Length: 198
Image 1 (cartoon, rainbow, N blue to C red):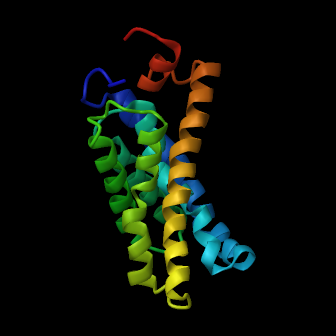
Image 2: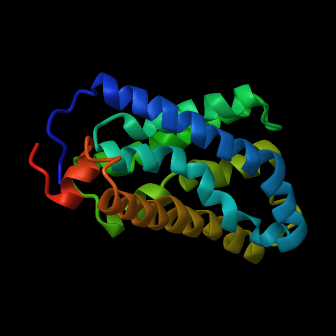
């Protein structure tokens, strides 16, 4: 289902900013606590299974509002808030936020912002890995201890995690909230799920 007008309203912009502030707090926890903990418990090879959480800044507001630019704006603003809150990765989070948001935005743009099913959301959730996986290797040298075969597994997990967490899980949770409450009735997802006329 496509959204009605393409221009973002004040309500949609405000909602995206507030949601991004909350997601930025999740990003901070993931950056400063979960990432290091995952390396200790899962080992470096399987650490990317948690990576998809860093992509929800794009898919969450985009799935709710369904207009051009929301994925990029949401992910970048979440990164801005993460930086403001005190991320251990410092200003590099802004570059990641912009590029990851852009990758999701391009995936959604490829459907004309008209398809919001499981496949489209999985693609939008996985797309940021096109930036994150090589960027982590180039900027942080994270794959240096891994063999060639291990690197393939490592990089593949970025896409799987993004598709499942930022794509499938985000869609499932938002659909549930939209069906069971009125909090999203003012947005495209709420209108679609409940069949509310615009």
